[in-house]
Amino acid sequence: MAVSYRLKLAENAAEREQVHRLNYATFVEEIPQHPPNDERRLVDRFDAENEYAIALTGAGEVIGMLALRAQRPFSLDQKLECLDDYLPPHRSLCELRLLAVRREHRHRVLLRDLVAFTTQRCVHAGHDLAVISGTTRQIALYRHLGFEPFGPLIGAPGAQFQPMYLSLEGLRASAGTVLGVSGAQATQASARFTPGPVAVSAAVRAAMAEEAAPHRSAEFVTRVARVRRALCELTGAGDAALMVGTGTLANDAVAAALRARPGRGLVLANGEFGERLIEQARCAGLEFDELRLPWGEPIAEALVTEAAARGGGASWIWAVHCETSTGVLNDVDALKRSAQGARAALCLDCVSSIGAVPLRLDGVWLASASSAKGLAAYPELAAVLVNGAAPRTVPPTARYLDLAYWLRRDSVPFTHSSNLVAALDAALAQVDWDARLGHTARDARWLRSALRARDFVLVAHEAAASPAVVSIALPKGVPADEVGAALARRGFEIAWRSAYLASRNWVQVALMGAYDRIALRQLPEALAEEARARTRSGIRAA
Image (cartoon, rainbow, N blue to C red; front, side):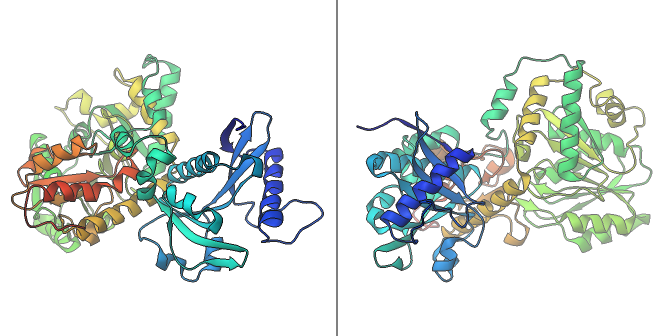
């Protein structure tokens, strides 16, 4: 009779001791991999690094286990030479080991549940490929769960294993069995790949649903201070003004601060959002020169240095870091050098880069940001990050755009949204930024490679490509609006409605927020299928 159990991580000494004894029963007494001992317990050599998923009965008995480990070298590295040569590129790897279930409870459902629980832990940790040494006795089960064999058999006769891997694609393909939902249902749930609004986590949604708090309360002021401090820690900025509004509002506040600086400035544009900076500088009445480059072309350091030196030199330089329209990531270090050489204050639009790419703002005077996009919260909070001299304002300036006023009043001079601040606070608190930035960069490399393999033309060159957004120039005769709408019906939401995209027949895939990393693996082929359905040439089958 099947016993009920729950899946969890081993969290205390008693549970780990049962793991060691089950390890002995399986890999000493049943599969003779290790010599017997009087203690009848086997502590894995990687025990300190292992995370154990266990099946635990109501009586507290561990009846099944599977270990997860992400630190190289793996045990498979020591058994199979050149392991990475067998595996798909651009992946974050982990290893699953020591799958064991007590004989009296050994059935496919429990084994399936253990693997499902552990692979979900892998995905949550940012990994997208799990390797395992699958016992030859359970090859059919592993295949059923989505694992793919690679390389030769390893181990001694009587205890042989087949190296196998489970990719996010394999997990999606076996979702009906492993996750208990259909692939279509899982994709429909959260396959949003737009630059805003972005998919958010359950913790962010819960924080947004909190009861509204008075913006003058000590609790709210403390939370605002915590968010400002987290933004500074993430970017290396000295201070931050947190305002109610969009990234456009943040840039208007930057423009208002630039009015107080003497001399002419220089505004750079190589896409839609650089053009918007030029327009905002004009609306603010700033005196400046323009440096325009073709869309998709990164801003060259030599051109900026030359332009900044003209006419007695620029007092300030304003540019977009990640040009969202094209997916080009302008070289922030080169911009810093140009500004330093001209003794100019550097201001950056970082709305699509903060939280999406590694960024340190030393050498940048003012930088704009938004609560959505890479920060993975809801829209309508704007931030201006400040380094060095405090911003001043000259009249006439709208009170709402006065950065000095916001900073003097701890970013709470006017009515604020406690719900939006709570959501951003939750988004900032729950993230391991090194891990997120790492897996976003790997996902973006994989995505660009997969799209090029299907003959799509990417607007940004690889050397200047942002991991946050990929802009795709569709062929003539393949309408972007039809492709975007068709993908939406399949559960993939990409960007195509913006005027600057529609006029060029471009679509975009953004890797911002809590995007669905499993659905991402299906997206390139889905995009190719919809493009092929609308043309007889230009896009080949993968």
